Image 1 (cartoon, rainbow, N blue to C red):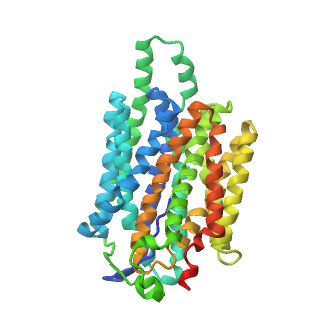
Image 2: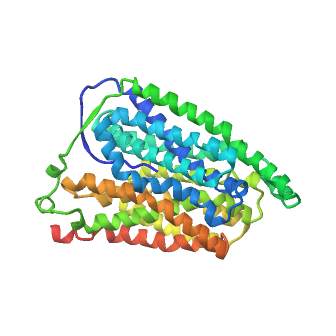
Image 3: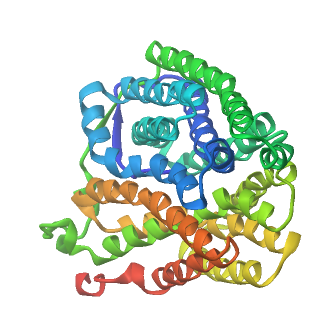
Length: 431
């Protein structure tokens, strides 16, 4: 998920942009890869740690709640370290979270897995906050949108790859294992589950090593340092300049709520589809690839946005259309069965794809000197991805995975409202 903040930035130097862009592209690849590994971890840990659905969705909660907890501290950290060193620190944090998976797997201790996920999320919060400004400055201002699109593609491709790669390692014989477990005595069952838990050790050691190496490369790279200038006030109207509080912008506050709902439904679509495929009778050996299908459909939508916005339709129109598709696809998934139902859950990725790039600019429009504060609130709204999937898991335990998708329908309706009129709230008085 991209959190590009529109800020005025001054470079201390103007080196060639190719090398720095490759580094930032690699970071966005890491964002996507680490973020969407959780889709495989949910069914994996549900088996390995013997969890119910609600408990397994604590995976998403632990990871995404860090965006809320670390939103403000990450900004403080970057003021102390600078942006380039902040990138290095963020990578070390993600590496530390990944390394915690080793003792967690050895002792098959679920709370330690959750702590590792929280630390990973904290590191990614720092990385997101530090890296997004670079996208705007590494090249001419008029081509910034193209660079943002490129970074989004790096993120999406990695997100599609992560479940396939990790799933092939840790869920390769999950169906046979689930059948065997019912026939084993407690000691034999513990042995099998310990073996399953140990499968994450090597992948996460490799990830830790890659992150540490990249941290060192960035620390000694020629990536330019940046300074932020709070010049947004110059771009705001006189009445916006007269505002004294961020709470005087209703369209922003609504935007924070809508982004909270959007991140929740995006993660539900990506993280639930593997378990939902199993619920529909599809073997885990096949279902483990389904998150990648959701992310591929997101990539398709992202490419549509690159080509069509604003040439053929506006971001408001894109958001309205996305909300309608979200309601339509969710209802079809709820009232159909088998492969058809799973396909429409995957297509929620297409419905979700243009929501972030549409909601963000609508929410921060006209904030003037409050732009940075508004952006911080929007980053903290990513915590919707922590809470709504947890609610999905709770409903799944008390009903079933298919009926739990009713949760996303009112969310999409709210997003549609914001696209139609919510983003205009309070603006009429500012004319």
